[in-house]
Length: 312
Image (cartoon, rainbow, N blue to C red):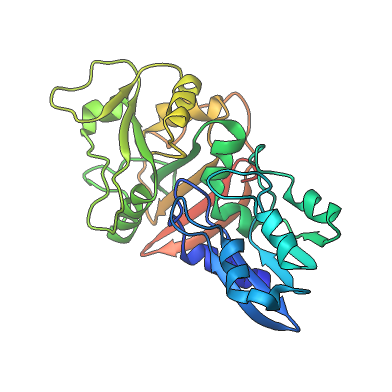
């Protein structure tokens, strides 16, 4: 169906519109696609406008499939709902709501204008802009805790430098390249002296490299110290435009973020071995944490477990 195509367009252009969300749109008339588009680079047209321009007069009486609710406010561009109404579209199908309080309400405005509206509310649509959605809705970055562990939950293997394989380590560099910031705790910074940059993968911009904890930082460290409470620091980072944060610290940092209910997603790379000793990837928690949307996939010889702690 054409909503699938709208999601495909948005997925292929992920990050192009940063710091704005990426939205895909498809115009269908008489069972045929007559126009499609995706959000242009920052300051450019939204996906709906691109698709409507491609459709031209064929948009009159057509259905618009869009990966996220059309905006209803005037930002850098005019409201998309006005363009949709002017184009004569008679039906709109959206993949998810817009969490931005300033721009939301587009579906209601379309309905008031006599346009048939359908909200599909797909997980896939929400996941495409999950960092931006959290940044807008909660005024903090979307936080992903990434950890490499053995099957018995240990983060070290006696006599080995790495827990997981080369394929998993490359994927971690891709995750860094896609994140606004990467962070560890002070103990990791002192013991491992990590660089936290994205290496040997395509990277539009390097992430900010952070350490949460009390200083001082080790001599020569190029990391950025964040010494306040994790909640306060996340608020300050969000105010600086940081939408996504990748945690790579040890169990102390992970436990602090989990206890503060500030982890949105887990990425657990599980190596096919038993360590037998060493710290586990998370410490004792005050209570259980239920995970949702759990999925697994192989990465080389390892297994990647992905799970959310709240709806994206």
